[in-house]
Amino acid sequence: MDRLTGKVAVITGGSGGIGQATARLFVAEGARVVLVDLDADRLRATVAAIGGDAVGQAVADVSDEAQMRGVLDDSLRRFGRVDVLFCNAGTEGLVAPIADMPVEAFDRVMAVNVRGVFLGLKHALPLMQRQGGGSIIITSSVAGFKGAAHLAPYAASKHAVVGLMRSAVLETGASGVRINTIHPSPIDTRMMRAIEHGRAPGAEDAARQMITSRIPAGRYCTADEVALTALFLASDDSRYCTGGRYSVDGGMTAA
Ligand SMILES: NC(=O)c1ccc[n+]([C@@H]2O[C@H](COP(=O)([O-])OP(=O)(O)OC[C@H]3O[C@@H](n4cnc5c(N)ncnc54)[C@H](O)[C@@H]3O)[C@@H](O)[C@H]2O)c1
Image (cartoon, rainbow, N blue to C red; front, side, top):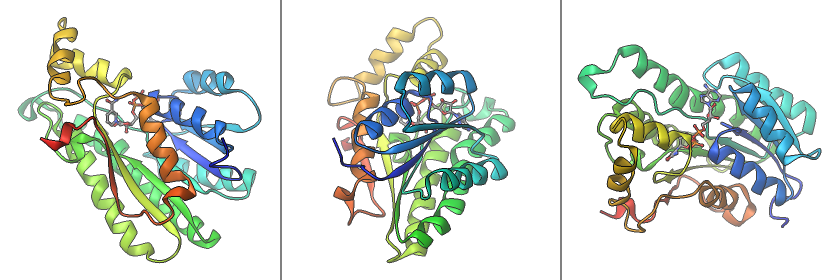
């Protein structure tokens, strides 16, 4: 219950499925957290549900440099340090074949999923280097290893963050800052409901069964299972782990 005692964590996408589960677990393990999200109503409800003094909130768009820098500066001012940045905000974008994908849809996915992570790294790395260490965790996906039909911008964005993570590791060297990616399989959150609907409007259950049939574990992942991996990477248990890609996918990428 004390694996994060004394640590301060900023979690983007903080009112989404994975963000909420991670926030609850991090607080239970002793961290103070700042939840960042675009969705102000859900953010407020998430913070109220977790309760206590250990949770702060910031309505911000991770793809906006001034807002992302502001979130990190405010967190530093309020708590004195930022030990963990969980770059987890993301969007699936439009579900459509490449030939039918408007370029604006491609750009929006890249802005949130790639530029958002780039901005998190850009403004957290100097701060963490100054304080002598920290852990940056990026939510990629199984789509960071494999293609995803009708989700090409999403798959491209989740591959791209691996390049950002690896480059950041080479730039930070022995500074004590660690950077890793997490690669979940489909999870029971809003995002998969939207993808199932996009793949098979009106036949979402069939789409879900088809996707599940490709997972050796025979079921979707849960947000809590992703949160447990984030906890490992946030805590000192992973003190020698950097530059890694952590699958939480029930064997989906073994094939
Ligand atoms: N759900 C899955 O099956 C799955 C699988 C693998 C990876 N992921 C990744 O996990 C992460 C979290 O997704 P989730 O499953 O919790 O989905 P979710 O939709 O429940 O949560 C995503 C959150 O990100 C927020 N967000 C979107 N754009 C934002 C922006 N520009 N600025 C700030 N916040 C923004 C949303 O408001 C939402 O609360 C995403 O990066 C997603 O790509 C999800």
